[in-house]
Amino acid sequence: MADCRDLIKICEGRHIYIQTHNFPDPDAIASAFGLQKLMKHFDIDSTLCYEGRIDKLSTKKMTELFNINIYAYDQIKEKMSEEDYIICVDSQKGGGNITDFIGDEIACIDHHPIYVNTEYKYSDIRFVGSCATIITKYFQELDIPMDKPTASALLYGLKTDTLDFSRGTTIMDIDMFKYLYPRADNDSLKVLEHNNMELSDLKAYGAAIENIKIYGSTGFAFIPFSCPDALIGIISDFMLELNSVDVTVIYSKREDGYKFSIRSESPNVDAGSVINLALNGIGTGGGHPSMAGGLIKSEDVAKLGPYPDTAIIERFTYILGEQNNQ
Image (tube, rainbow, N blue to C red; front, top):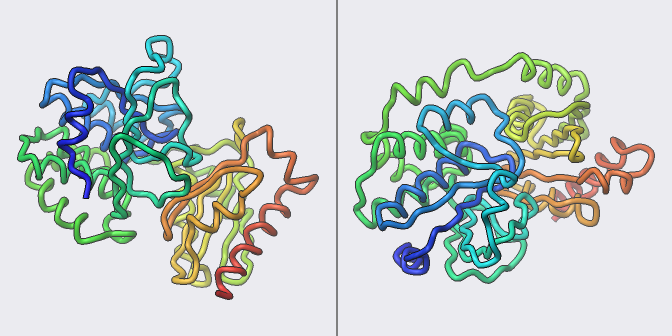
């Protein structure tokens, strides 16, 4: 088991960058924020960074409410050098959902399966419900005081990534919830959990409902306009409520290509493996057995041929058929 004291020793005397996956969600931001606070306890300064956008209302509210300063790569790349240390949080180098920044990725803290073997100076990859769970464990193991904003952010990240403890939850997640709950500000959490839907969100739901296609027990839905990563995942969860569906594949057409979200409640279907195989050669994808995401970049969309919707469904149904027949 990784010992976070080793990471602290590696980073001593340096300013480090803590990088989340692209288009970070609450778990990614909370984990990066928590790690930043932990490092600060040992007089190690850090900058939180990401590629893409923070485009979900609840995530924006979270950064404002807890005063989390996180910067897009374009804002900081002129300051970075090849010698700067980067810690990948809630992501892994080569994982398909993280841009390769100019610095040196010396560490990885994540809860996703490994798809590309990478050497780090420090690695802590545990298959738990959220990355926030791992960061919270560090605080507990080192007996470091935790302020309310940090505890609240970590608790919110834990709850959102486990879908209120209904998805991928482990005993460790429950234990860390018990640790965080008395330290968090529940009034702040209520603010985050209410009034988070925008008009554009409703339009995305409507488009997905209008375009849904069901093949066996798999539901496919195409959103023909740009949709935030987090919202695509939420709609994928929503479609999973259909009583005839146990796997959902939702994808949105955006400027950067086709963005995918897949959910699985089938014991035979590993969502992360399915999307990784279905997009092999034309895109990237990965994640957990129950939820995963992927991307076909705009320059590779042409590989789908003249009928991209048909090609996407054929690719996924083939891989799903392979897994269901095993």
